[in-house]
Amino acid sequence: MILAVLQARMAAGRLPGKAMATLRGEPMILRQLERLRASRRVGKIIVATSTDASDDALAGFLVSRGQAVHRGAGSDILDRIARCAEGISAVSHVVRLKGDAPFVDAAIVDEAIRLAQVSGAAYTSNRTPRTYPAGLEVEVITANALRLAADDPRDPMGRVSPTAAIRHDPVRFPQANLTAARDWSRLDWRVK
Image 1: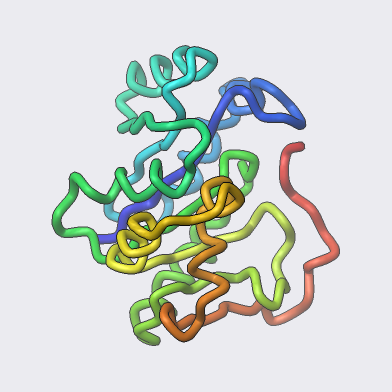
Image 2 (image 1 turned 45 degrees about the vertical axis):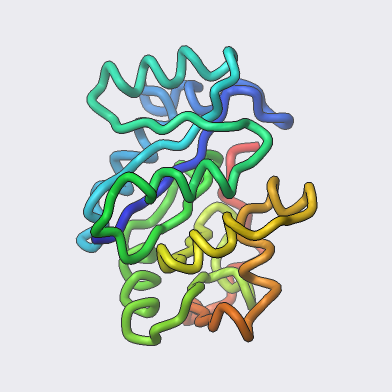
């Protein structure tokens, strides 16, 4: 099974509360989940947020709408994402998405998953080289690679940038990259 983990927090540094900011009459996070649910390859979606009090309203709102939520340490994003997959034994791959990207494209998510599956890569993304707009980033990590990375001791930056250790070790974690037919990397579709 493919698990999508959408990381979102209310205490974002650039625009606090953006997950619940209104976008076409609904909170931005719901719009992002709508788009992600259009994926044909994702089997389950979990929103990963922190146990900080500032995220209580976000978690409560999502649960009231029937959305699965996992709460973990605010300072360790990698652990939060890895724990989402821990409780689901049949997960083969985890798709990591960020909460500041409400325009996520399900077709790009599906293509990244397809590439991950056919290539056998431990880590697949559309980040290096970047050809998609910022805000359309997709990372697909095998559940095993995610577990290994989460179990490794890491520096504080590795806790904030959850895939840094995986990205920087292509020998241990073989990689594949999805590129767009045209270079759109100059565009930024994130909500900042």
